[in-house]
Image (cartoon, rainbow, N blue to C red; front, side, top):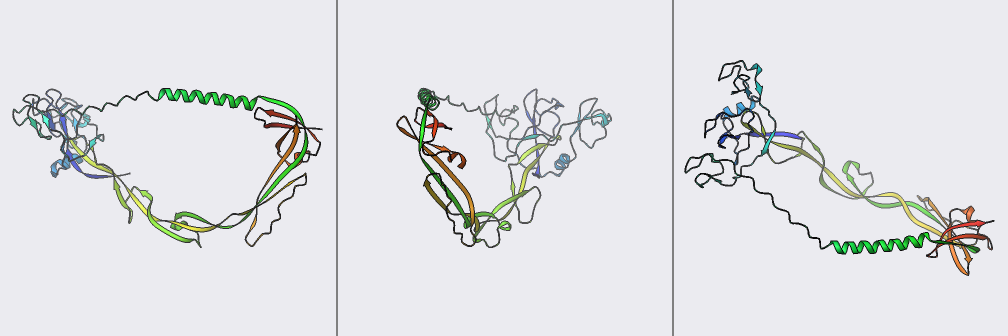
Length: 356
């Protein structure tokens, strides 16, 4: 994603001694005079506005501040010597920069309650308007407590699961408990089908440059086809929520992550494709199976062939039928031929063997 700078905002920091909120560019506490710690964490102001101060903007763009290696004083990145002790800053430690401070918002936050006199102050106030006491940051709202899920569903679920297991157990018993019998073939059945292929109208969709020649019923609408990190002619800029980055100077860089949506015509249309236009089926009894007679029209051709063969036998005065996988196996279903059958409790033949 492309990152776009919206401007700069002055951050804040909380004094570790008295909890006073101070401007980010201020190196000592307004409440107690304590020095800003070297490891201070800058925070986003409650209600931020982009600064128009050219000095602050220039300071934010110079790079992270340096802490003197000898006295710890915070100096500008452009300084050669410490403003406090005069030491060479080449050995100084640069502040960390680039971290996300938080979302950028201009909306006012909650009122700040003075802990000393209980006076309510504006969200941006750093000291109480009544008694002058330092104001700390407002506490974060407590997380909503999630209601505990009831267990009224547990008993019906257990009963249902038990009934399901009983049913599955009976079905498995019926399928795998088998008996064997010897039967005699009394009939042979067959079915053969033949698909006829030809041009059929098919609805399709795609980008305009993908529509085949000769397509009919063309209907198009503009849709996003690709996104780009760089501006493109005619592209629509889509940006996320602005957020603030710590520049290491007490100033924050307000940025947005943006992409550029490139649109194109997406079309629905009808085109001719090869498909099944008819299926010829021929059935019969006996061992002589034949294929349907196909009279092809122009632009038609033969498609998939399917075969199905069944042998009917009598065993224990009951008729059974079973499928044979090939025409050669079907040829053994001669009238009077003997077959060994494996039959489950549902009276289905699960295996049949030809007895020479």
